[in-house]
Structures are given as C-alpha cells and as structure tokens.
Length: 256
Image (cartoon, rainbow, N blue to C red; front, side, top):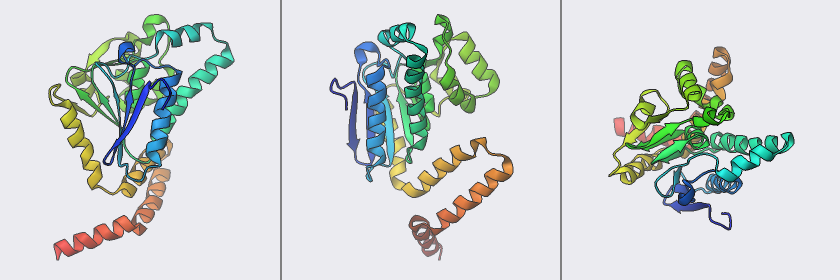
C-alpha cells in the first residue's frame, strides 16, 4: 500500500480486507486513499485464496467523502485536471464491478458523499445499527454525479431524487428499507456478524459466483431478449465447469 499507510491490506483466510486508515480525518477520500483501495482490490483479485473482499474504515466512521485538501484541489483545478480527478474515482467504481469476487462494504459510523458512493458501489453493504448514510453534496453546490449512476440502480427514482436533492443523512434501518444497503447488525456484535456473513462465500463455488456477478451487471443495460440470450450462454458455461460437474455429482450421490 501507499507509504503513508492511508489504506491497509490483509488477507484473513479466504477474506481480503481493505481498510481506509485515516481515522483522524474520518477516512476522507483523497488521491492516496483512492489509489490504495484500487491497489488492494487488484491484489485480492489475483489471489486464489480470496473468496470475498471487505472494505471498511478504521476508527468511528466508514468514510466522510472528499477531504478538505481534495475540495481545495477541485476549486483551483482546470477542466482537464478536474476531469482526470473525476475519472480516477470512476475507475474505482468500475473496478469494484469488474472484480470477480463479492466486494462487501462493512459500514460503521458515517458513510457520506463519496463515502456513501463507495459503499453503494460495493456488491453488498452491511451496516452497524448506528451507521448513517447520505449525499450532502448539494449543500456546497456540488453534484453527486457519478454515484448517481449507482444509486439509481439501487433504489427507486423517487428515493434517489430525495437523497441527492435534500442532502440529508438517513439511518441504517431507513437505508435498508429503501434498498440502499443489505443488512443491519447490532453495534455490539457487528464485527462478528460481518465475519459470519462473509464466511458463507467460502462454502460456495468461486467460479459460479464470478459468473453470476458478471452476468448480473452485464444484463443491466440489455433488452429482455438479449439478457435471456446472454443468460443462456452463461448457463452453458456454468454447466461445463468443474465446480458444476462436481456439485451435480455430490447432489445425485446424496439423493440416491
């Protein structure tokens, strides 16, 4: 990882852990943090042991969005510099979807602005009961532009509009109820609950999950017939895989 250790990386069994490590800055995003997350994701994607990746924040908060220096950089940057900076975050969101294993956000404290975007860009979002989510960008005249592409796929149009135009924080329970996150766990048992949830992926076919993840996001922009045809192709690929052949053999043996 980066020399200043703004992002930590470790592998615990079959789980890769990418931890934002700026607790004194509420794990705010800057160039080093974004680069560190990308590096961790790429490391995990090439590690055969890894069945899932967990992104979390050190200290009280998951991520508070862009830090002060990043905002100052935006204010004084040229069009080309701002474009390059925006595309760096775009590349991170794309990378999360391209990684073949599940990428899971484990959110404690606040996930705001780009931090909320980072969480919602993950395949699964697990939150502690006291966690808070929000897109406050409009309060400073900014637009949560790229994360809107993710948000619009997570929640209804009406909910998305409300979140990005009012700039208010919402609770973990509310976030779950509108489909922004998957699960809410008790603050007291959060770490253990996350571990138990993630451990399930160790018991499943890595190849099947990779195919499923790729197909799920691939069909998003396809017409119904094209989605079915793409699904048929993946169906055939899955049938021919070693994992599927072994799985069928185990099932038939158990059922006989």
